[in-house]
Image 1 (tube, rainbow, N blue to C red):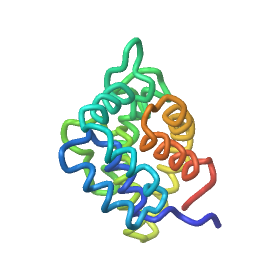
Image 2 (cartoon, rainbow, N blue to C red; image 1 turned 120 degrees about the vertical axis):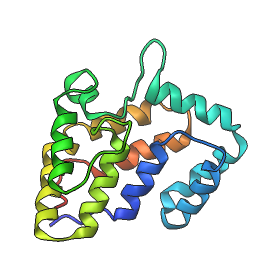
Image 3 (cartoon, rainbow, N blue to C red; image 1 turned 135 degrees about the vertical axis):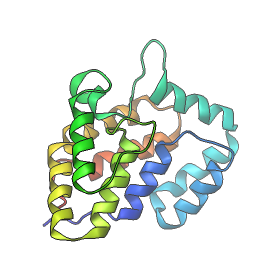
Length: 177
């Protein structure tokens, strides 16, 4: 059996996909204490203005020109559009776990999905293990390695290159359930 990723690492990755704000640098410092792979990115983030980090986040994930290189949504990667079947399928998984996706975000947003996987890992009951296996093998390994690779190639910040590399490693297609 392949070792499962720690829920804390999945939550850290989810947090790093969020839009950077005034408190984000301090949050990364805190995460780096338990996520040593983040330590090398701190020096760069400490010397870059927040506006540069925010612009890179926007370019990569929200509205890059002439295209957005890394939309963090399963539907975009699996179907070439937002709000596709992948979002509906994942919303169904959340419902079967007694949860709902984050308000205002599609159910297939990667940050929400990573939080959901962490929740299932922490529950640890047989139903959660089945849902985690379905999420991992039926959804995540189908697109996150390509997302991570693209993020690693496209990012101008070491932070997002490190996130891309970490996502590739965690979602390489091996079972974690």
